[in-house]
Length: 167
Image (cartoon, rainbow, N blue to C red; front, side):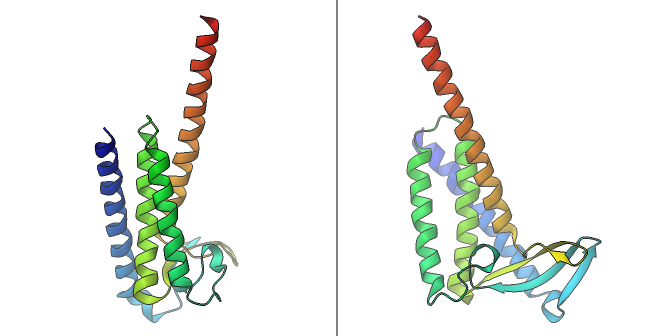
C-alpha cells in the first residue's frame, strides 16, 4: 500500500516536472525571448523573467541561492513524503506529488541556469501580479489539496472519536 502511494506520488511529480520544463523550453525558444512581453489576452501576457529568488523575487540577492533553495526543496519534499505516509486519503498523495514535481521543476532551473524561468504575467491595467510558471501554479494547487485533505482528516478523526465516546 505504501509503495503504491509513493509510486503514485513519483508518477505525478514526474508528469509535473516534464510539463513544467516543456513549457519553459517553449518560452525560452519562442518569440517571447526577443521581446519584453507578448500580449495574449486583455489581462494576460507572456514574459520572460529570470527569478533568482523565491516567491515574488524575495531573497534574490542571496549568495549561492540556487543551492540553498535546492536544499530547502529537498528537505520539504522528504518531510512531505514522511507526513503523507500516514494519510488514508487519496487527495494527500496527489497534493504531495504536485508539490514535489513543481519544486523539482524549479530546482532543475536553479541548477541549470542559476535562476527560475517565470513567464505567466496576469495584470489589471498597470498592476501586475509577479510573473510565475507552471511549477509555481502546481505547487499552489498541491498545497491547497494538502490543506483541504488535512481538514478532512481532522474531521474524520474527530468524528471517529465522538462515535467511540457514544458507545
